[in-house]
Every structure is written in C-alpha cells, then in structure tokens.
Length: 327
Image (cartoon, rainbow, N blue to C red):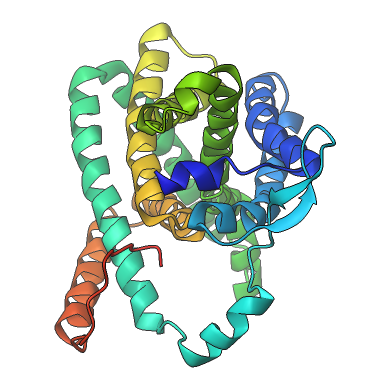
C-alpha cells in the first residue's frame, strides 16, 4: 500500500523526539495525573505541541512530496517531513484549482456521520457488556453537569448583580476547561498516527525480509490495532478504577479508536479527523451540560447539508481512476 511507504519515509531526529513526546510522553503524563493535577496540565501542554506535530505529519499521511533533510542515524540526506502548508510547486495548481468550501463540508459530513453511527453502535454494546463502566461514566458526567449548573444557579440566587461579562467568565471558570479539553482531544489523532508511524518503522527494522515481501498490509493493520489499544488504555490511566470499570474503558475506547484509525487511513487527511474528533467530544459535553439531543440534531443538519451538496453538485465530464475523500 502506498500509505505504508509514505508513513515510513525516513524521519529526522527532531521529528522522532516529537513523536516520542506525543506518544510515550502523553502516556506518562496521563498516568502521573492520578497523583498530581500538575501532570494533567502537562498532558494538555503535550496536546498543544501536537498541533505543530500535526503540521509536520499531515503531508506525510497525505502522500505529499517530502523535502531533503538529515535522517535518523546521521546518514546522508533523505526525504523527510515538510510543513503542512503549501509547497512552492503547489502554488500554480492552487491558484487554478482551489477546492470549494462546500467540498470540505461534504467531506466532514461523510466522515463525521460514519464515526457518529459507529460510536452509537459501539456505545450500545458497551452499555450492555460493560455495565460497571457505563454506570461509572454516567455518574461522573452527571455529577460534573450538576456541579456546573448548580454553581451557576447559586450565583443568581445569592443576589449578586452579575453583568454579562461576569456570567461569561464564570462559565469559563466552571465549564470552559471541559470544552477546552474537548478541543484538544481532537489532537489525539496526532498521537494515533505517531504511534502507527513508530510501529511501522519498528517492523521495518526488525523484520526486513518480511517487509521486503511487499505484502505489508498486515503490518499496517497490526499498527492500527496497537495504536487503538493504547488509545483505549490511555483513557484508563488518569484515574484509579475497579478492574471491571478499567476493562470497560479500555474496550470501549479501543473500539472507538479503531473507527477513527480506519477513517484516518481512508481519508489520509489528519486535519479532517482532528476536526471530527474534537467536534464529537464537544457535542458530547453539550449533551451532558445543556441539551440531550444536540449531537443528533447536529448529525441531522450535517446529513441535510451533505444531501444538498450531492444534489446540487455539477456532473464531471472526466472520470478519475481513484476516488480519495481526503484529496
């Protein structure tokens, strides 16, 4: 598969250190956060750093040309990461053929709806198979929502004459951090693709004969599964829980990670999956805090927007040999 060749292009020492920070560093920060809130802040800082790592990894995943730089091991120059922006050779194509905004909406709608439906199915079976996890998670979210809503109501009942700006800043104090964390959660896709790159490079190093056989799909599937498993385990690191809850957490988020990973490989668009992941988490918080059917309404609006875009799309006169949603 071409995607395997693209992901296993030589990487610079700097990028390697960033990949290790985003993967192993975030795991360590999550585990230590059960003992100190300081490491929760460290984890969010790593997610902020992931924004810049995404800028480096998106061209690699999308199959764009890579520039020359020093490879790991101090060998001769080799192709490696580029910035996630426009390359000089792309300027003419961009001016003459700029993708319309509606195309991005269509791509986002398709990927979000697939993930949303998959999440509904997995969450349904998770609620049946892992009742302890489901009850624990539900109680935690209900307590968080009750605390925020009660605190906002208490401020009004105490007779304080709060201005609009006071209410806005109070909301940031109470719930803003949750939505900020939801936004940063989208960059867990950088964590996912980083793990996949590292695993593929390890397979390439320790199994050179099988790697040269050109039948590498198995390597990619193993890397996808391992990255999803670590994604699920990461959600159980920050808080000590009974084993029944821990197993349910790992299984549930591993399944969700598999969906996101498959969509990431299908679209080959890192920024698109970051947007889908962050939007989904934000909608889940809105459901718990404010309106129960917000994600369903949002999905319905997306479906309508996608149907309108498809219905009004102008037919093309040329046939393309391959359709890739990430392009």
